[in-house]
Amino acid sequence: MPKTQTYDIVLLPGDGVGPEVIAAAKDVLRVIADFYGHSFDFSEHLIGGAGIDATGDPLPPETTAACLAADGVLLGAVGGPKWDGGARRPEEGLLGIRKAMGLFANLRPLQVSPVLAHRSPLKKEIVEGVDLIVFRELTGGVYFGEKVRTDTMASDLCIYTVPEIERITRAAFKTALQRRGKVTSVDKANVMATSKLWREVVTRIHAEEFPQVQLEHALVDSMAMHLIRKPRDYDVILTENMFGDILSDEISVLGGSIGLLPSASLGESGPGLFEPIHGSAPDIAGQDLANPVGTILSAAMMLRHSLGLEDEASSIEAAVAAVLAAGATTADLGGALGTRAAGEAIIDAIRAIH
Ligand code: ATP
Ligand code: MG
Image 1 (spheres, rainbow, N blue to C red):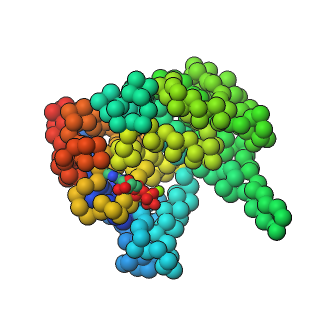
Image 2: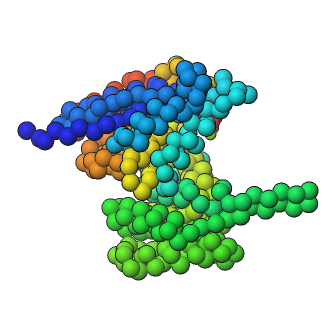
Image 3: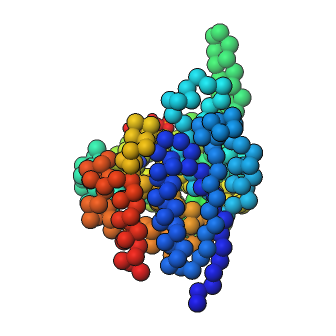
């Protein structure tokens, strides 16, 4: 008998397609728990517009408390036109929970399977086999520095501290050790003081703690170009807040559908927050049309990064790859499956693997 371990998983379905894609991911997690002999205790909590409608608050205090006490948190999406112009905005819920959980690293993997490479805006032979992950720093940089505006000038202060750079650097190198062993650190060290510090700290952590990883530095401008010309060259991409924001969006279009892509946001300790990169997609909400793959892959990242269940995560990823390879997809990828059927196809593939 495998040892049964219990994990508390908080689900935040949120708005729009959120509840549909979370339901699909929950079914997948249940099947995984059965196969590996774990017990996942799910609880659902309000966030975003759903929180506003029920309580007037996009982040009710009990949601925050549940997330802080959980082993992992899986979010659908927040927002939508329904709450435009209201006193509270759904997005406040997302910003609030990120802050309360102390999340400092945003991870966005991209894999382009050969069968879907033709859906990319780039040539098939450039993108097929791409397998990279971006580590974006979330707490520092120009987003949080002092902002000044007068009639004739404006400035945005960009600040980074050594500990802020060290912790995300360690997270990126650790992940590289489990992948192909290469980190590309992106900065603008020819112009910015924060980037010069970034490069120094990354270089030192590499030499002292991760000499077995291959490290290269790239300037953000040339990186934007190389990501289009030779995206297959990259494994782990490590960068600060604003460069990561921009490069993540650039990378998100290489794969063909926004509905496929997962993300993770991690803190120092405690659970991470996992969510698909797409938004609430109000245009297709409630119609069983949304692609659940981004959320299901986010659930796999949760198993890997917050629960430490690597085999379980890999098994979900293998099932997703098999289903996509077989062409069993939702309409965004040209297929005929609805959200529920796409989730069930992945569950069937998990059963076939085991
Ligand atoms: P938000 O402001 O909430 O981020 P957005 O307008 O930026 O919303 P999305 O909600 O992600 O972006 O939607 C962008 C487009 O992608 C829409 O046409 C939507 O239908 C589509 N889309 C988003 N998510 C999915 C999904 N899971 N499956 C299929 N199509 C999707
Ligand atoms: Mg958006």
